[in-house]
Length: 72
Image 1 (cartoon, one colour):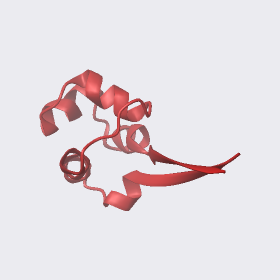
Image 2 (cartoon, rainbow, N blue to C red; image 1 turned 180 degrees about the vertical axis):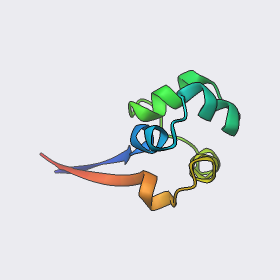
Image 3 (cartoon, one colour; image 1 turned 60 degrees about the vertical axis):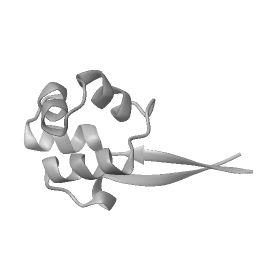
C-alpha cells in the first residue's frame, strides 16, 4: 500500500531569501511555531496559508509544496 505525504521545501526557500521563521510568520499572519510545524511536516497549511507563503517567498506553489509517495 502506498501513502502519499504532503511535503515542502519551505526551509530551503526561507534560507534563500534570508528570512527567519518569525519574519515569515509575521508576513503571512501566523505564529513562528506554525511555520516551524509546517517545515517539520507536523502541520498541513490551508490552501490560503500555503498561497500566502508562496507570495511572501516569491515562489510558485509547486516549487514549495509537493506530494511524496511512500511505498510500503
